[in-house]
Amino acid sequence: MKNKRTDQIMEYMRLHDGTASVLELCTEFHVSDMTIRRDLQALEDDKRVIRHHGGATLVQASAALFSDAPFQTRLNNHHDLKMALGNAASEYLRSASLGQGCNSVYIASGTTLYCMALQMNYTMGSATLVTDNVSVSQVLANHPDYTVISIGGQLILPSLNAVGHVAENMIRSFSFDYAFIGAATIDENGIIYNYNYIEAGTFTAVLESSRHIVVVADSTKFGKKSFVQLTQLKEGYTLITDSGIQEEFMETLQNNGVKVVVVNA
Image (tube, rainbow, N blue to C red; front, side, top):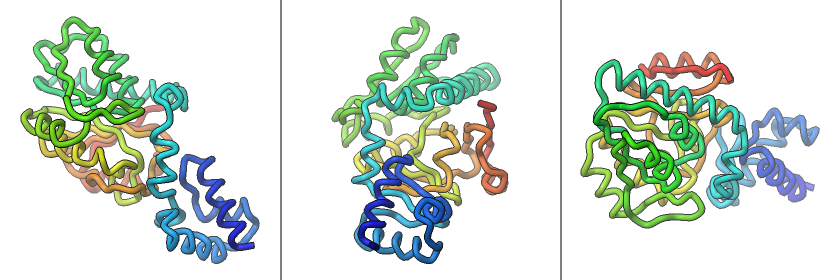
């Protein structure tokens, strides 16, 4: 029965964005939290999940089913929310460029940041926009007033992100006033994770080369862990998210000096 239930837990998590809490698994399978915790421990021992406070997340091999979904499929998932967050990120950049000058901006990959690029219908003077993603670069290049630089390197499918030694060195040759990045998940301590270790070097290069980091992520990604730790939200960082963010998490971030922008969507 235990083996059957652990398989059912895996299937449940695949159908729920690769993660689940102990409470919802107890409700779903009509067993005690102690039983679910034992099941999750067994799955972690088999390297099938990563346990965290209050639940678990699928490891990279399973999580890749979600992170590597076709671009259009991911774009359509929670599309209105992504557009709202993308618009808020775009407006944040507009205010930054008007208020204190903004000469260089990095826009990373991800469907929400693609939605940001779609809504950047204003002029930023002499600012240069840099991205590692083919889809984002195509959108930005359609704006006649932007200077757009596309990072070179190995392209990975299906996201069409540039990764590897060439991409990392190219990023480190620049200095960015602002960098807009996404997140696969963010745990309760504000640590940002990615599903794919191949992209970790690119993220690290961006973080090292940027004066201010803006993370754009919806609240369904909070309180979860994934495969690769990237960085922690801290002073000098801004988080743009939706009203689903929990008050306790909001307080933790603000105590750490993080600026939090909440979008009512």
